[in-house]
Image 1 (cartoon, rainbow, N blue to C red):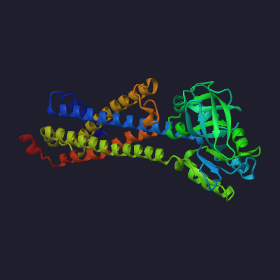
Image 2 (image 1 turned 90 degrees about the vertical axis):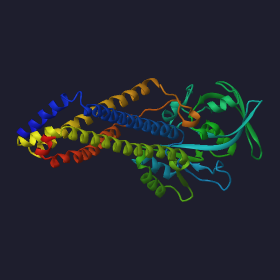
Image 3 (image 1 turned 120 degrees about the horizontal axis):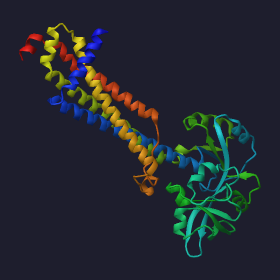
Image 4 (image 1 turned 90 degrees about the horizontal axis):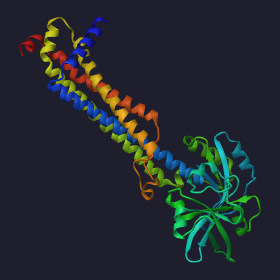
Length: 404
């Protein structure tokens, strides 16, 4: 215990008196590099978590975590009707892993403002639509959680293309035999920033699609399922496939929007690669710094050994100084990284092009577990590296060191 206190005292005095030494400059550089690396890692993690959360929320808000439908032999959007009050739907709603089930139906259409025409797909929804999940996408909130008969929700991109605004009148032409058309009023405008949705999808009442298709009341083209925990989607999907009839198929959102999820995975892998590189650089800096400190203090080490100090006590002196440099760098890096993230979270300082990044500004997600993991990883790697240069203490002989 006495040796432990002595090494701490000498370490503090050594650090205090090295203000004009060469090692002091190296220590400052090492501390700055550690702080900069940790700040970059923290910022990368919160941005990656922000992207994943925001993009996931937008994707899930449109179509849930998986869809169940009966595909016809024709177009992807030409469906066969399924009864909403089927036994398998009641079983699904009772599953503890499932949060909600909503009916939907698709119908290709030509939408015209009497001057221009756009081809798209109408998505029919009813009162079971998960409106709270989709709510943040609206420019102006509708009166109900699904469109009334004769109303339509269009995307901002479609509204710009056809010069539409709230209250505008459009005509929907259904190309079937016989052809049909309906006059609709724009009730609300949404913007998901997901290209496939904003370019091709508009919302109407599912009753309109039933009427056009000649379906009975209480039928739908398919069902979208929200699970309580997205991480359990694979296992929940397996259970759902055991319940649904053989003529229905499932399609998880990871398959429907596979490119988006691959993009998010690439971002995650880049953060991991960045962590490995920065942790290695931090470890190298710590090793180089301690090596310089040991070589600069060879005479002091020789004197301590001549006075009877053992190698473990002397090694403790340099290890303590190394840990102080590391912890100061970690503290500064965390403050800088979290501070920047806090400013971006509140003030949206860095904008983005939604056409390329799906979002209008750099998102921030507070992934505290990953931030703690970064700090723990840097400490562990640096600790392992610190032990290498201090072993040189064992090779320094008192007579040679004092003479030098």
